[in-house]
Image (cartoon, rainbow, N blue to C red; front, top):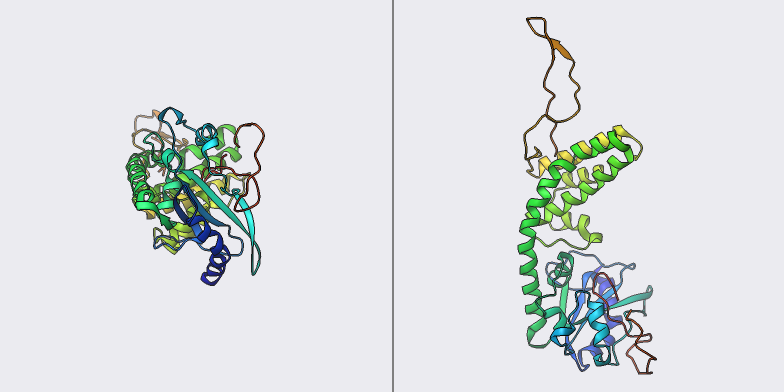
Length: 327
């Protein structure tokens, strides 16, 4: 894997060296499995893209900020450097062609206090980013600031997830299976599986990675044991029409939660679960039901005709969000 990564970096070396010398570049980062970073547990393979981020120093007026970055980029289109490459293109490598993804950001937009970063964006730059060039280390400082903000938000998210999980691991999936059908129960439980994985990161004070790395990174970061990983895999297996299989999945995910130290009892105390007990007779002959057991829960808009320019790589320049790739 490391040999493949070095071959990929050699193939992209000319591009990287050129980008570092271009005007208006505030920072240049290699990202994800292409990056060499101490907290990066992703793995490079022949299926991997080569991800890098070009952070541009382009002036933005205060009233040009918009919640969607694409809207701000459209407003400053005429200020963008003509050399910016297409977001996606290919370079030859020993195993064929490798896709290059050039994630492009405007530094002033990202540094605006109104711009928030989600957890996987913070993780991509803070844990899986390798700086090749960073003028005055300004982008590194911004990453640290955005990461601190996100970790503070994750504290509240930990409590929200915990409260949801106590119901979603068993009570709600089984209840909805009885109400509207077994496939719905399985669907709800699959959502609970996502909540449990997110809770494992949040309670450990770690940023939630991008979806494609969430499960793998739990083990790679040492947040779960091999036995716990097997329980999560068991909980993923699904026969969507089987109530018996839904019960099995609930048990597997519930067992994982207990092994992780989670008390699955819901916050409120009340009779719960189906009434499975039979009527009993008291000494006086009066028939009554016993109390039911409480079950644990565990593109830019058109801006006129394009002016031909020489770019570093073929294609039309686009600015996209580094993770959603939203233009």
